[in-house]
Image (tube, rainbow, N blue to C red; front, side, top):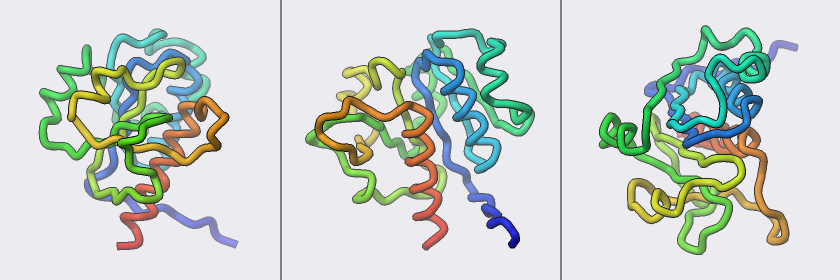
Length: 163
């Protein structure tokens, strides 16, 4: 049986990590980008060095296949991407779209916060994008960052492929 191949989406989705803290999570997201064609944006400050061996190990030998852009701040990212449609992922939010009720489009930026805290309240309140949540049981704090990114990225790709 042949594996199902994923066609390239043009323009691709961009997966944005704001101040990620755990190297293996970022490495796993980089690997996801390599196999899916998504772009990866990291916004400083990071909780590790880009050359961190755990980061490299989690990304395996995929780093040369990842389009990676590093920004020194949230504002620098916004200035460089003023018109990109942005989805701000949050674990909780009464004013958020649920993942299953969200319509993603080609080239959207899916934005995630740091592992221990999520996106800062000032980013969520800024109006820089639409808020989105991944369905979870009420008594659970949150998903692992790389798991959440994978769920959101593949749902976005599924939607675009069906149109």
